[in-house]
Image 1: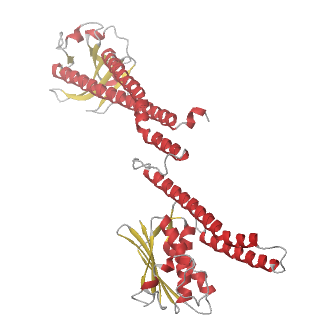
Image 2: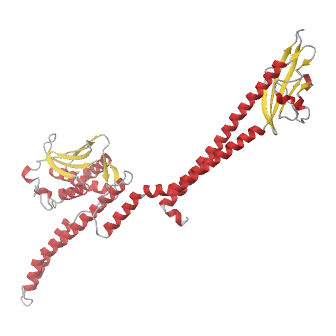
Image 3: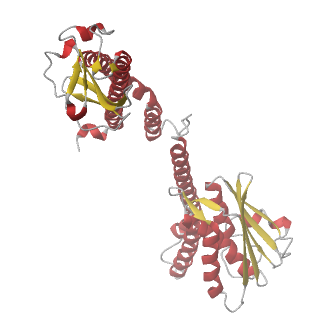
Length: 441
């Protein structure tokens, strides 16, 4: 592929010029043909009028009689460009105009039915034949064919003039379009140049997001990029926070080891004790660092994912025999990474299986510009006083049940990365907990 075709402007310019040339070229051919058909139809009507004039001047008794001087002056002049002839049975020439005396033209033609006419072009002459049956006063039926020929010079000159003017204006229009198209392209692609400049500003550290405004066609791209940037910023912030917390937490055990006397018999046990403590701190901080940004957004059917998830958890909690009910209003779609939705919904349904009494209900609906996914159970629920604290990592409402207390925190963090939120309430139907995720549609 040519290097110039790697440019979007060059592609649009080349494609536009080719389309314009194709469109104007085909339009020119169509207009020229239409004009030719129009003037040839007019020519046929003029020759028909000449035939009618000949019929009006003709008389037939024992033979055909025509005036010495015809009403049409050109028929009286040799080589005038208008010629007429009347023939009888077997193409016998009964009369021809003075103008046709020196004309060497093929007058013969295929037979015609009475009242039938035939129009066409023969070389540089247009010809119209008209067949009639002339009934004489004595009652005889005489077949007569009236033929009129006219030079095509006037029609050809008209067509040449029309063609010249047509292609002049079409060519001028193409040239004007070609001259103005680069300016139109430069103006139209301005938002892409501005987007490139904004991305460069982010790379240089002068900006943190794409501010816009951008056209509607570019807005989905900038929205996704801003989500990716936001996710990356959140990952970096989590990494910084985790490293800072880890460093701060390790100061104490390191100081204990550093201040101890290696010669003391209890020193090895002290080192083992502090090493175990540091391992616990590292594990804890790694749990706090769980999370990630978003991949490119896709539309994920919520119902299908919920069905797969329930099928898997039914095997995990087979001893408890939980029952799952999935209620979907319409066809709700989650716009994001399927793995994120699986992580969020998996944590909520898993908690419902652990802390509920066997019944789990999943509701998904999309209305009023919002996607809501709710998980309800028939367990003891979550006390209002604990609903804020259980959102934090390592905090659990039920310390007797197994777990690390990070499920709700992970779900809340992922929901926040999509500009969503996690809400905790009571289930009116199952009288247990109701955990719901809300996302802008």
